[in-house]
Amino acid sequence: MVNRKMQKTFSIGLTAAMALTLAACGNSNNNNNNSGGNNAAPKSTNSTVEATKDSGKKVTITFQNIYPDPATPAYKMIRELVGEYEKENPNIHIELDTLNTDQQKVKLKTQAASKEVPDITIVNPAAQMKPFVDAGLFAPLNDMLEQNGLKDTYQTGLLDYYSFNNNVYALPDGNNIEVVFYNKELFEQAGIANPPTTFEEMLKDVKILKEKGITPLAIGEKDSWTGSFLFMNILLRTNGGPGFLQEVLDGKKTFEDPAFVEAVDAFQQLVQAGAFPDGATSIDANAGGNIFKTGKAAMWSIGSWETGAIDASSVAGKVGAFQFPTVNGKGDPNEFMLAPGSAFAISANSEHLQETKDFLNFFASNYPKKQFELKNAVGLGQKVDGDLKAAGYSDLAINIAGLFNEVKGGDLAFDNTMNPATAQVHLSSIQNLFVQKVDSAAVGKEHQTAFEANK
Figure 1: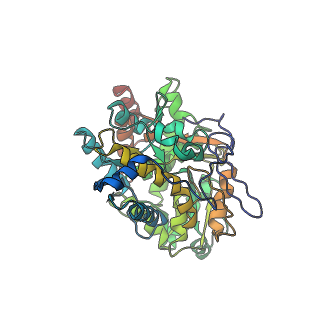
Figure 2: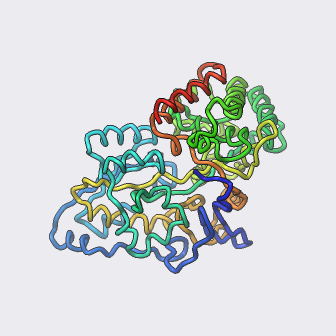
Figure 3: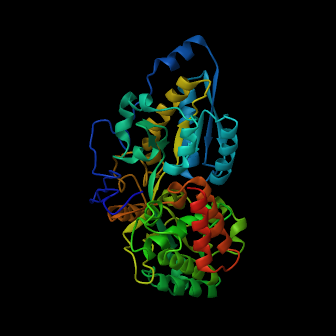
């Protein structure tokens, strides 16, 4: 759990030249092994790859991933890096198993149950990945991280979210904050001059937009994490700052606490005001995002990882971003929901363990440089040196970079903090609020019952 003591979660130098240098969970760790921006990234030099080449041995590595949308920079990134690696290593084939986030989570659980985890898979940090580590399903990556200075490219402290017993088990793809993107043209059409700074203003804007026939807030709640991520912003405010879930874990609070009930009340106000698309629970996260990216919704509360995708969409140049507002006068807008990214883990039972480590080393070493080239470097988990403005980054990207500079701390998502059984009850409970109005105190009691049953 991240708390108020974590100052400057990200540090991004916003000079006239917009030099981007990210540093998470601590101060910037300058070193000579930077692998992004204009610097040449290191390439894997492990002898196993050379031996595979020399022997003529054909190796197939399965790479499960969550980049299914062809319109996004991430989709292009993974295919370009795989193509480059296969060209350099013709005896190795990288087979992509591409799914959306919720599909991948479900599939991985099934694979884990039969101990058939793919060579590389996607896992989320902290509480979500712990059961896989405890079951011995992931290979430690310490040795691979020490090659080519790869470990030093990660933001200070970030790898801690993916480490257990001094072993790193996954390499993160990003480190993000949740923001509210908004379509400036749709705000203007509705006569809304500025983005809201209070929850009351947000509710008012929702009602105005709804009256104008504009979907106020895009979401795809078929993938239940989306509603939870938004809800947790509200709880961060009603609690007066970070730490609510940690206090529950420590036995200092319960889910029946007034701050939690107040957050449920506020969330239900959004639902009842018609903030979300009709049938939100039948729309997946990608389709929900496309409602915003095709200009059909005025706002989208999501992680900063979507910046590049928005800039590659039809609303490019029309979008700004703002902090989630205060709720009932509570909270600091510069405390954010923090999102250490999904991460790449290697199966401990891989038939080609060393070849897979060699490929992931290449992939992770070249990842920030490729993302920078694709205008998708804001919110990476690795340090990136580069001139955003000179590289043609958008005003939106520069806007988001500015918000990173204001971060005072925040919380991790519910399902990255609580055990999976309690998290599942939470996700289903919040999802249900999109379908029917429920007594908010009963929602708190439902959460507490699940927490006590799954300690």
